[in-house]
Length: 169
Ligand SMILES: [Zn+2]
Ligand SMILES: [Zn+2]
Picture 1 (cartoon, rainbow, N blue to C red):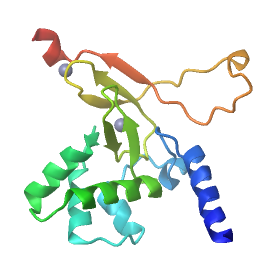
Picture 2 (picture 1 turned 180 degrees about the horizontal axis):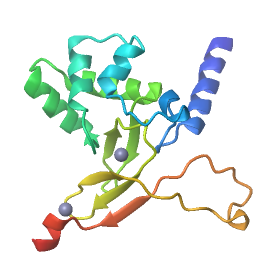
Picture 3 (picture 1 turned 45 degrees about the vertical axis):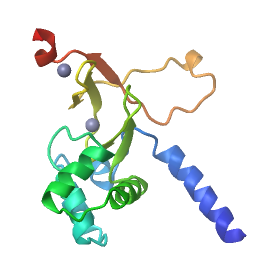
Picture 4 (picture 1 turned 90 degrees about the horizontal axis):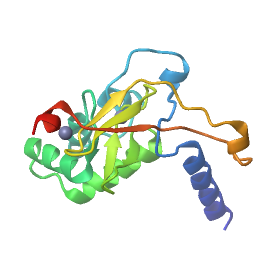
């Protein structure tokens, strides 16, 4: 009883501390400009890397990575055919809980997974093709009289735009 209460409490705290936007990792708090790839961060923290989990982390590497679960699945399966969709979902959920990946809900309602948790960023999204880029921009400030007594924990800005490819189409 005590244990389950503790777990619920922890989850509540986590969901407050780790909303669907930028989450400060240790390296960001220390002002470290270098962004360590997801796979290296997981290795550093001693996360149990099975073949499937390693491939999933490896396909989520690079700049502007915001993949939906089925995209992670397809990419991972092309490297390791035995990867299962269930493992992809379980791994993504675990990475979100660890704070190593941030879950974003796109305008189309699909969840995307963002491994760039070390760099403060907002998103530039093409309304036509859904391409999503990380961008650096100042946070908007909520005037105190508009805060209604709420404590603002995080801000995530989405710039809805049309990418150059879609603009000429
Ligand atoms: Zn586009
Ligand atoms: Zn991002």
